[in-house]
Length: 331
Length: 294
Image (cartoon, rainbow over all chains, first blue to last red; front, side, top):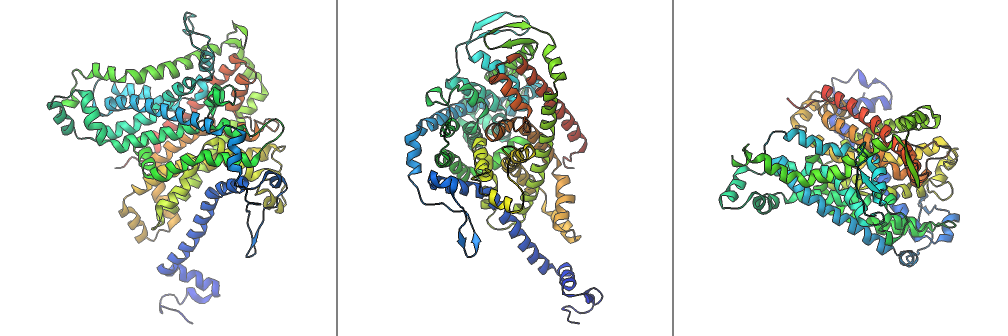
């Protein structure tokens, strides 16, 4: 009996080759590691393909001329493996998408919405984060709860009244019927999206900034105060620069969320026109008309629209990960 | 400790918090109160409001279409939460165990988080499209017919897949952080005791990660109820035969296709209550079972 390490496995290794191999894997740490590594590569490969393949498929569709998309056969015999590939190489789709729909305007809208929301959220959340992270006062816990509970608010709960008010109908006090004022007609303007977004996405930024601000040693702020700055001065000149990573994280996360938002913007922009401040998703949907759907242009537009986000994720991956986890979990 | 003093803190705190409170009250708390009010009215586009009391609620209570919408949403949410947590946990474990190139694995797994939901919906539309989908051929070769434009359960499955796929990245972000915080000593002890890798994940890591996992269950529940609107809207529009008519989409249609603001508000309130009840249950469970360190 050919065993590698003599005495102890004489009983186990009596079976066939499979049983022998199994027992050697169980016995031998090195073999176990090798098997595990192989299994790991298979599993990781499978999941990478599932997360990355859809994006590749988008590219394939974009490069394939429309006429081929509906009739196309997607297999390509490379070394016996069938793999979907572009039918032709129609880079022109990336030009045509701008000719058919003013996609750059939709993207511009998205950027304006995302940037202005981010600025408002950061400004407001900085003050709140300072209060929650560095001040102690009675009722702090309760106030924090009131503010942070918003993140559990279902957007649907306040969408209808908000839409009603933004249509320009009068704002009344609930249950009393006292008319407060005629609201300006805000639908189809950036305000109708930026304002609710700012409120909705505040809690996460407050979470993140509270954690970061709380970690700055008191001594630093005290030193600044002794030098004669006000609280706000100390916040802007000492605490904020020291918490730059936290601010960057909050900014990146807010930007991504607003850039991707669909529910509100699809309702507040009454039509998918760039003049109505419809964001980039409205643009992507514009390739779908009543009679035809330009699948290749839709795919091309999706790629172009997603590019900024892909870049942000690659550049700011660390920030996103550390920020979400720092802000989301403490307390 | 001049920054932690009690006196004068209250006034300054109030001043600095004013913008936050203003924005939250005006755009969130106030409209929510308004929704409660409108739910008691017969209100719609271009007609006078009329107080109807609880009639809207009674209508929903007796509507079998609405009941099925509730059931669909709850089942959908349960599957999204369970599926997302399970897949993400396994993926996180794989990434955690790898030594080289962790950053790239992480990027490729978390990027769907940053993808706009609407684009995710389109991507899956293209992947599973009955005529031009790239996976349609292979699936049909297995003897199954891809017909989710007409087949309710299939449509439900497609929406479910997108919903899970899109949420994995977010979960992995939290799980990887929690897993990295687990002391190496525990891993080493487990290894010395001969605990296998998967067993180590289930019996050592998961119990320690319970706070994170509960947090994610809550976030995923909210996501499943509200964040999946784009998928339903773009992939199935609630159909076929209302098989994917989840509450959020049902409410959207009531309000913005039929312009029944009264009934739509009632549906908002019900949805709000459903989710609130789920939250309370989950928070209770969290308090009871999660491990916050020694």
